[in-house]
Length: 477
Length: 97
Image (cartoon, rainbow over all chains, first blue to last red; front, side, top):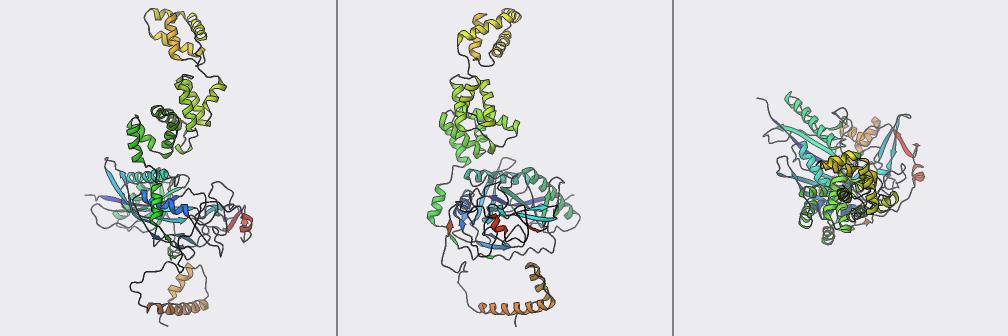
């Protein structure tokens, strides 16, 4: 009988924090600046420069720790992780090994069978990002941009509690949502503000000991993570089946080729010689600091879902989608605050917004229209100033350019014609031009009215109230 | 000398420190390191039972800065230290990740 195997997975997730400045110096973290224009002696590792911790980094790290049920370390410090690489100008990375800021946490994920599983968090520590290396084919050399050097990261290290790609994705989605709700990061995998390294081993079902694990890097999407897990599980299972040994190593996933390869050779010994960083003083987290951060924690998804259910009369499914992203929930609440119509706001978000996002491949973080303008559009339809099909047209323009709907409707002359005299004239013309439909109607074909309404709307360029057209038609026929 | 540094150790330390040492320098380094370790071993004679490991020599804690941009563009000055540069970047030997 063939042996049965199980995959054991733990994750190391790096999250780039949404601070304005770097972790140890006052350089900007803004994206897209010219190479090395956001650097200073500290983040380029100049001798004699001294790092000072950005308080916001500590507060974000503690906030994430609290939201993931961690113990907050009341006496924490930084350590130096030594390694030589040109993207690391100090020849050490400032990180936390001995006393990381958060420990012993957990998050709950939903499993395929509808159950709930707890994934342990071993620790969360603060550290600095490295610079960016660009390979110059022309000069046959590498060029270094240190703008990213010193950008604050937290590394969230899970316990080896996951057993499938589905569980890994559920865990990552949960983490991402928590961190986005906190406003601590936008967590975009494609852009690298969230990066996941997968530690994976395979063992026979029922075995007590873990197998030898490998660490896989360069996973830029949920799809790449799923494929890499499938690929590495198969590679390790094949090795075990054929009696060979899995080597503990770091591997790089190549998503286009669908395979991984070992990243480091034996000469590059992984010996980080960690020691306490004497340039940074210890962090003592006081009761006051903790209480302060705790009091500023936002309303998280489960609380939000409960409140929406109690306060607003909208379907559970809508609540699930809207609270499924911080941006969507913000849009909903901010629009609601202006117009107080949960059902209508929800309908715009669930209907046209989702449809256009799919059609135009827009991510929720990149939505452009403002709550103010959505509220205005709802007011325009409420007062019957525009009909629903015009509203959809206007919304699409708003979706692309966040145009002010009142102004746009005015400028383009899209207001519904409520002048009965003018409308009546058009209806009469339509009746005169379509004797066949009129005859059909008198012979009992109700459908003929629909055609005549359509013709009238067309003649009015869509700017009529269909209910009024319907009524006038029936009167005049 | 109580601490004898082996050839393998000095080779390994050389790799970690990115140093290429001549045979003569290696012998000198072996003897220096041995004597340094002997000196450090002195500390081991102290009874440290119940003493908490120290994290920092100064009695200072919680030194923070606010999250406010204070640095501008100082690329030219920083790059002036670079042996080689190109397109506003530091030029280094070809490196793969």
